[in-house]
Amino acid sequence: MKVLHLDRESPVHRLSPEVKIASVLLFTIVVVLTPREEFAAFGGFAVLIAIVAVLARVPALWLLRRATIELPFVLLAVALPIFGQGERVDWLGLSLSVDGLHGAWNIFAKGTLGVLASLLLAATTPMRDLITGLDRLRCPAVITEIMMFMLRYIDVLIDDARRMRIARISRGYDPRFLWQAKAFAIGVGSLFLRSYERGERVYLAMLSRGYTGRMPNSGGVRAPAREWLVSAVLPVAAAGIALALA
Image (cartoon, rainbow, N blue to C red; front, side, top):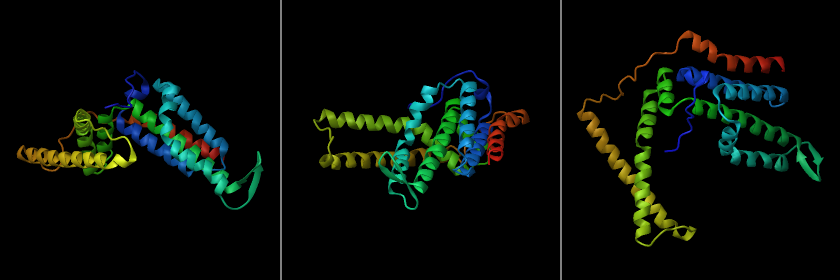
């Protein structure tokens, strides 16, 4: 399974997962609450993200490539000025909605900053540590356990799908077109049933070994106060920028 984590030696990588999760969450809240007309504030937020990326030794090109996941939302944002209502302005022969322009900027700026912050979190924290951090932050146990099982068995599901595809191709059938979607849907259904049956067997095996509804404590040392103070720099600095430029 392809992961986003970058194995580097940096001050950001060494922080405990729970403090990084809390920092990114609070930073995102500050970004979302900032009025869309405060253009300078968003520039300040971008500078903060760039500083964290440099400290974490995460290449800018790596971030930009993976940030393309937000392209569907960017395309939606592009359409807002064209189809928006209210006051309009002319630009390069196009009649654009002022409110739509503000809405497009709002989606692009806040979405991009949120995606970049999330990518930095993923790049500096292994997936297992993220789940441990969520557990330490008192995230509902059912959510963290589902995520843990998903992490453990996603490779198994991918391998099952690969074997089913090879079996289908070896029999001379490889659906690629819309009118062949039935075969693909049947394959997805079969994969779901096999996964469900495997999940039932795993659950029964866990019960027979004393599972009580909660995974054993992962242990580890909780984050010291110093790390909480360090991680607070990002959201506090973002809040300071928002208030100073408001």
